[in-house]
Image (cartoon, rainbow, N blue to C red; front, side, top):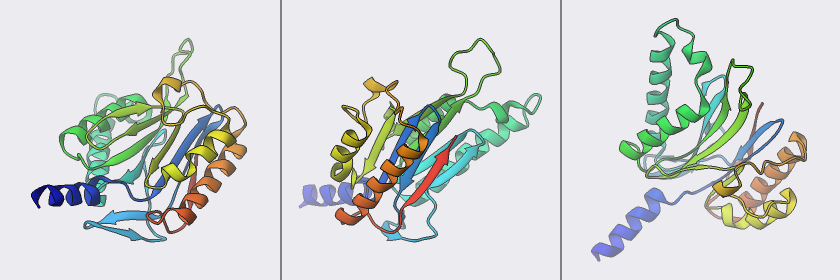
Length: 222
């Protein structure tokens, strides 16, 4: 009986309900999701639900799953760090916060304090060094519950992921998705085609997955 209760607890608190798909190309990043959100331990659908939080002008964090209250607290903690840096030194550091730096800070916070939260970090590592070949490079980081971090060109997460993985791999002409071994294998078919493919995949997941729902929301980062 105890083991059954543990399984039920893990299922309702750590299995991600909903669908979030993100992909990058040379022109930018597309993120699309449904409008399901976890609130007070319940999965709710709302047209007003916002899963993407703007950390800086160059970094976004997107909610995938876990307790909604923990995601809100995580965003407040990240905002506090950025605000602290803004008024430190010459006051210009916040405008150049690196995506990679914030992604690893988020990983540490998830590991230490918000272990149910599943998020995606999107952004660029801005550099004012003209000799830096990685300047303005787009990044996609998936941070799993517990703190594992994955750097990949495409991320499909949530309960609806399995229903659209095959479709996406065929449309995007890639062998694997959610694989950090292919981190440089970004889509080269253009931002508009990437947007259409990802948005249609989210619509498909909402239609066929009983734990995804609401309305599709698509965000363009460039």
